Length: 333
Image 1 (tube, helix red, strand yellow):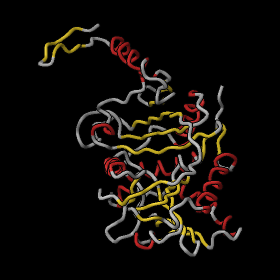
Image 2 (cartoon, helix red, strand yellow):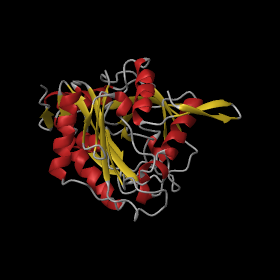
Image 3 (tube, helix red, strand yellow):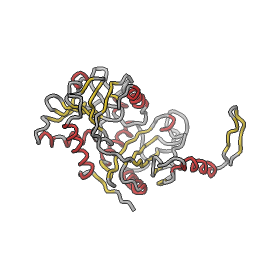
Image 4 (cartoon, helix red, strand yellow):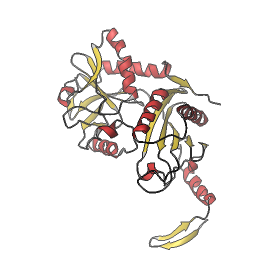
């Protein structure tokens, strides 16, 4: 055990070596079951880590103390990564907007994420990955950082389709300006506060409405509506994050037009007043993939029950996740 220094609240241990710190961390993780992550990749370490005690990010990483980082995700279902490539493309677009480079070319980033998933042995869950300006110093500018850093983790989750309806509220938390809303950066404090606002009011999540009265997005999801004319509408992506799952929904939904269930599919600016007259509403995001909303700001959406069209859209996405073309089989050992 390390030495101690006297402090106002008692003796604080001073660890002399990394071995002592690792022992403390490993003891901590013994009481945490299951671990929230089953594998991590770090370009700082230069490899994949399976010991939760070592899944760490340096404190001088500019993503940690300045928020200079971007991230993205992809779902794992039945041993396959779903839509990794669209998410990875968006990830690199976000990094370019945030003026963050990459320690590796795109193909190597992709290969690392697949290998990390394989090492985790996780068959259902998600991966999340980050590019940061990297460790270096505690200044605002990243000029003192030797180079960008890349991190990824595997998060086991036993998720299923969402069949029950939830409540939503309009948040009073200001939404991000378009520059920051359209890149998936690590500054999620507005998102955190908006979902806490919703939870305080007994709702599942909140919805942002912009200054012009147009519906924007949720704190970690897009929103979708079926109008009284049975048209599927999602808010335009010009001022909000372009959701990969939302875009996939728009690509699959014409099948319901062909079946005569929907009359049209598209994106446009939609006022909250108009949106609340919809017959169906849902949150749309990677881990859902469609979550029906039955009440917004205390007002029933449609008849206040889960609608059949959103369930049909959910089925389309779920089937695409299980057997569609954009799946990568993970090479588990």
